Structures are given as structure tokens and as C-alpha cells.
Length: 415
Length: 109
Image (cartoon, rainbow over all chains, first blue to last red; front, side, top):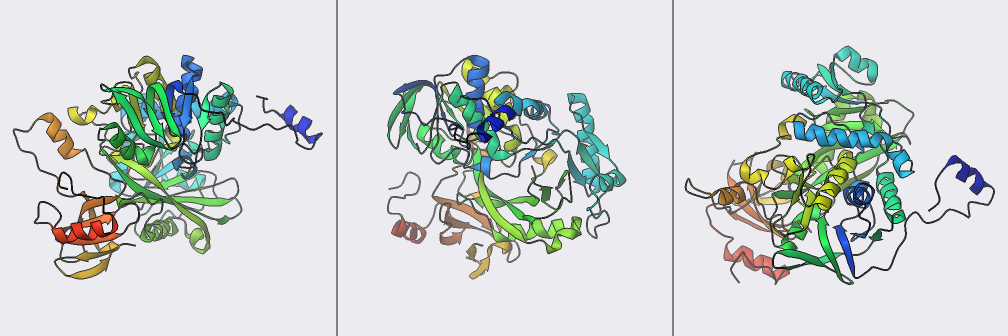
């Protein structure tokens, strides 16, 4: 595979861009692989990439029922941060954020990682106390964050209305090295490198059954024949429940629809990400100038990839209070993604009751930021057969043992 | 926007009047249940891609809890019924089977 470089752009400019190759291959599937990963989203492809890069396992297939990166990887609001309260979360999210710093170079693919800073507004006394506590926890975890005053908030984001009638801005938790990245490029960059290592990315290949013998994984049945494997990893987010049912086990997950929307493009007005958890809205401006907006999830189980209209109304209403200038903006697009929520709002990276069958799911509303770290930790678990230090706190057993990683209070709903 | 029928008020109202309460007919565990049973009581959920029997509360109406049969794929509602039941009544099951003949309630055929 040819390297992408400024030299390549110049070279191609002289020959009508006829030399660009496909970013990844569409190979004919083999009968058997060492590892099969179900789901070619960010997490699945990152898992495959680190299996090859860190552990030298390249006889890998990544199966995808639709198209690569077409699920939640292409539907999120691209926020990257690691200012979590609990130690296991801070560890994996910070690993992930730090991998993002050099990921464009590692993958030789421009992910447009933009560490522009993430600000989480404190708009009630409880939030002030909560975020001060998180800032201190982050200091102990080695995650650089700070609690900042309303004046600093206004300085960093001048379009904010500090004295909102219902919820004035009392301060904020600020992570200067948080930010955004180009979500599709993350999936494409990983896919290109996986293909380069000789892994097979098989699109339009829907898994219809899981083949097991004596409680041990044998392979998967798909819409076009069986594929055998030594190890299987299920990385299908909202659809994990359906795959688990094929494997004969249940997961502590519920799938709900989470929505996002973007406005018409406008001139640059904010160069940070702002999250307002009390009023349930968050916003950033994309490089194209669109305001990217996210809000709350629906309360009921849903697989339709669209949400209830009143949630858009609630989100936009609360944002207008904090950012009065957006009140005249027209919205361009709205969409929904199916997110898999666990009881403690923390993910699951775990072995399953089936031997050699692993699962990575439960990222809920905050999976995008975790893609590199999650892939790193999951690859380690698949290669060694046991979860490493990053993944082990997130095992399925924690629900039986009452060992929760309770981020539902720490992180609120917004991610 | 879902339109739900509160079986107590006998009113059809918009989703915003209600609060979703998750999977219905979960058997409560007692003090002599095992850890495994408690785990599934507290956390294991059905999460089907299809018919979901779930609890709803008429939050801004009578305030009572009731049950709804709804498809998580099409959002079609097959009917609502009283919470004072241990399984979906015959009428609801027949309603579901009209659309989805394959569907059956847990172990019953």
C-alpha cells in the first residue's frame, strides 16, 4: 500500500490523480481465521489493528453486516475527553485520548484530531461540587483537567450566556487536551492499516448464528456460508443483545436511540467543545462550520435509529438558553444511533460464558472517544486469553460481584 | 412520538405524558435467592429486536404503572394492560400474533 504524503499529492497532481489505490481490499473470504471480529465499526477495526500491531496476529477477519463505519462510528458527535471520575474509566479513556494524539501519524491517515479543549459547564451547586471533585480525582489519576471560573468560561467561549435565567454558568470542568476528530476517518484509517497487514474486512456479511461445540467457540454462520475461527470477538454495540442470544447468553444491556443534529454552516463562532449536562445539550463547531449538537437519549428500548422528536426540542431549547445566538440557526440534518446502555453506564470488555468468545460492548453514549483504548485493551484480552490491567475492571462479572464502575452520576447523560 | 393508551384513564395520550420503566414481568427475588438470581433480577434484560413487553407510568396523568406490548423495530404498539397481571393477557397476545404469528410469550406456545 502506498504511503499518503505531501509528496504523493504532488506526484498525483501531475498525473490526474490516477494513481490513488483503494484504501482497503475486498478479498474472497477464507474458510477459517485465527480471530473473527464481528462488527467493522471503530472499536472492531481498532481491535483488529492492535491485534496485528501489538500481538502479531494478522490472520483476522472483520465481518460487517452493512458498510464499514456505518453504525455509531458514523453517527456520533466526535467528542474526545477523559475527565472521568472513577479510576478504571479514567485509565482506559486517557489511554485512548493519548493514543489519539499520534494516531494520524501511526495510521498514516489524517484523522483531523483537534485537541481544542472540552468544557463541561457547572450550572447547579451540585455540579460545582461534582466537577471540583472530578478535577481532584483527575489530578490523582494523572489526567490534566482543571476547574475554571465563569470569567474563564466566557473568555474561552464568548458566545455563552453566563447569566441564564434558569441555570447560570457557575464554572466548568476544563480539559485542554480534549477535543474532536473526524469520526469516519478513524474507521477508514484503521481499516486501511488492517487491510495492509493482510487482514480481511468483509462487508455486507451478516452473522446469523454462532457455532459452538461443548461450550467452545467454533465459528459463525453468515448470510453467505460459515466462517470458522479459533477466537471470536463480538463488537456490535446496540446489536450486542441479538448476537448474545445467538451465543446463548444474556447481557446486562438495553438498547436505546440517541440523537444528534447539525445546523447550517456558519462562520467560526466557537473553538471549544461545550457540554451542559444539567440542561442536556452539548455543542461544538465542525471544520465545515456546522454546529454539531447532541442531547439526551430516549427512555425506552428502540432499534429504529431515529429518536423521539421532543428530545430534539428539549436539546435545542436548552442550548438556546446557554447560547442565545443559535436561536436563528436552521438545522440541516438529524439522525439517531442505537446505543447499548449498561446499568452502571460503563462498558463491558470481557470473556463470555462461551470459551474463546469475547465481547466488547456497553459503551452507551460515549464510545467514539474510547475507540483506540478500547481496541488496545480488547486486542490484549483476545491475544492473551485474559483481560489485561486496562480491561479487567470492565468484566461481565462485575454485575454479579457488585463491583460497579458507576459513571452514571459522574458523567451524567452527555458524552 | 408514541401514542400510548393508559388502561386506567382509558385515554390515548402522547409519549411525553408517560415515563418508560423498562422490561415488565420481572420476578422479584427474595432474601434466600442466589447471587446469580439477583444478578439477573437486577441487570440481565431481554433487549429484544422485536416485541418488548414493558412498563410505563402515566406520570402526568393518574400516576399509575401499566404494561405495554410494543415492537422495538417498528415502534408499533400492540396494546396496553393493567400492571396487576403476571403475563400478557390473551387479547394482547392475539393482537401480536396477528402481525407476528411466530411470537410467543416466554415458555408458552
